[in-house]
Amino acid sequence: MARKNPKAGPVAGPVAGPVVGPVVGIVMGSKSDWQVMQSAVETLEALGIACEAKALSAHRNPDQVDDYASKARGRGLKVIIAAAGMAAALPGVVAAKTPLPVLGVPMSTGMGGLDSLLSMSQMPAGVPVATLAVGRAGAKNAALLAAAILALGDSKLAKRLDDFRKKQNRTVAKLGR
Ligand code: RP5
Image (cartoon, rainbow, N blue to C red; front, side):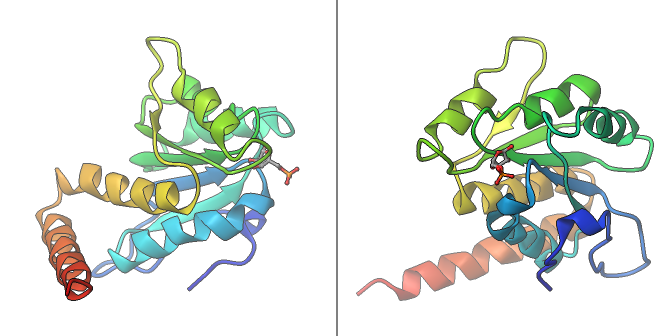
């Protein structure tokens, strides 16, 4: 299930029912972010949400990022998850070029992720980025938040999300003494 090479380009995840194109786009500033971001892909795929994953840097690939974000809605994407570390401009740059909701995941880089967290959460008014926790928790929660957004218009997905919460509740409760 884990996609080893996000640079390979967009690949739709498995979906229940008719095959559809990706509805969640995951972009990350570097393939070095993939180890963390694969948990977002795994979470989306477990919920039957078609997604694609790509490595694109706001600083190293500015034209490709512009193109990706500008065309995202027209290609059928509904939510974008953008992960980056250090001077983590990627989510903000993507949000500037698309009306889709952008969920930012700060990577734990040079300063334990605080640099990325602040870069991404301190967006100027008018161009929002919904910033999640640093690292793997943020990656997983970005996928769950994307699912919750999509579930507003998809009752079958809403049911799968409810089932996920119930299962999680039972799993956590089992740890209690
Ligand atoms: C950011 O710089 C990336 O998102 C990554 O978290 C960080 C380091 O990138 P690499 O030097 O490992 O490619 O742009």
